[in-house]
Image (cartoon, rainbow, N blue to C red):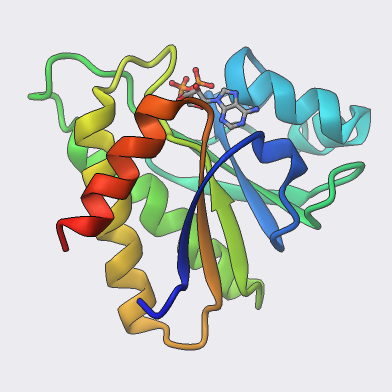
Length: 170
Ligand code: ADP
């Protein structure tokens, strides 16, 4: 991938990529975890724009401006709630990465930061989620050689190590 995938430990609200991805819920009207942090950092403008979007389906993505964030755009995607793994969770999570990346491309963006979608309150096992994240991203970067950078922003050491191991295994 020639360094186009980066894995870092940090806070996604501080990223300077063209877009950051929000692990939102279907209302798009804010919540806890990474969603709450992004809305706090972006300011009220983000909520007002989100109120015009009529929510978002699980596995899909919608874009807004970034308001007070360093990133110019926020791509809101809704991860699946983990329900044992036989309810289409993997396909839906893959959809989150696929649609977020393609939304960035459609808006001529060249870099994007992702949190570990669904691995918080939504309960998706992180060791499974990182495989989906990396595999969808590698597919996208292979198909789009001009896209510059995908950053996986990990909030904890455990997630960071899982991404490192997944990348090393390829
Ligand atoms: P979900 O509802 O999709 O599970 P959460 O926000 O509960 O979303 O958690 C998703 C992941 O984002 C978790 O790994 C959590 O530790 C991480 N996270 C929470 N806050 C931040 C942040 N500010 N920056 C990056 N990652 C974060």
